[in-house]
Image (tube, rainbow, N blue to C red; front, top):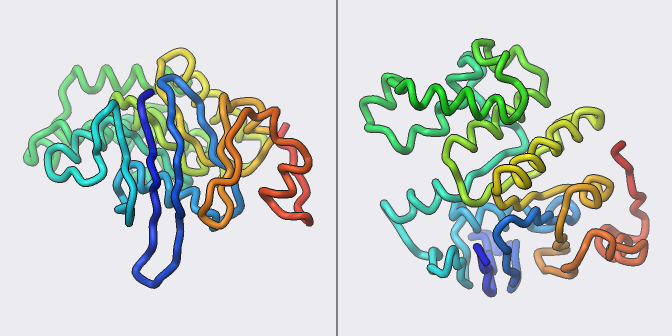
Length: 253
C-alpha cells in the first residue's frame, strides 16, 4: 500500500461540506479512477491528497507516514513525490515545449538557477527522455501554444515525470479535449502506469474510458464515497445511482 486515506473531510469557510468521511487505500502500481458528477468532490479530494487544500479532519498516510500536517521541507518533499496533472495543462505558452518540461524540476534547483533558467545538460536529457515517453520528442523546440490540446496535455505529463513522482494525480486530464484526442492522452497515462510503474489516481467523467483504463473505481456523490469496486461492477443501476436517473452514458471511442 502506497497511500491510505482515513476519514478525510473538508468543509470550506463558507460552510460548504465538500467531502465527508472519505476512506480508501491505494496499492502501488494501481490505476485508480474517481468518478462522479461535477461538484461531487473529486477535485477537492485530489487537492487534499497533495495538500493544496487542507483537510478539515482525517489523515493522509503516504508510505506509512502521516503527511496530513507536515510543513516546510517535509511538505515540499512530499509534493515532489505526488505529481499533479491539471485539466487545463497550465503550460507557459511562450516557452518551448522543452522548457515547459524542465520547469517540472524547478523544486530541486537553487533560487538563482531557477530564476535564470539555468538547467544542466543532465536535466535537458531527462526532459527529452520524458518527451520520448509521451511520443513528442520532435516538438521539443516548438512553442507550447503552437501544439494541439492533446499534445499540450502530453507535455504536462512529461513535465510531471520530471519530478520522478511515486503517485500521479490527474484531475480530469481529458475534459478539455475532443473525444478523438482523449484516448491518445489516456494511453500515455496508461504507459506511464504500466511501463514506468507510476501509481495513477485519475478523475474522469466518461465510463467508457474508466472501463478501458482503470484497475479500480471509486465514486463520489455529494462529497461522500458511495461506490468502490472494479470497472465491470458499474452496472446500469449503479450508473443511475452515481449520476442520476436522467443521466445517459456517453461513449468515447
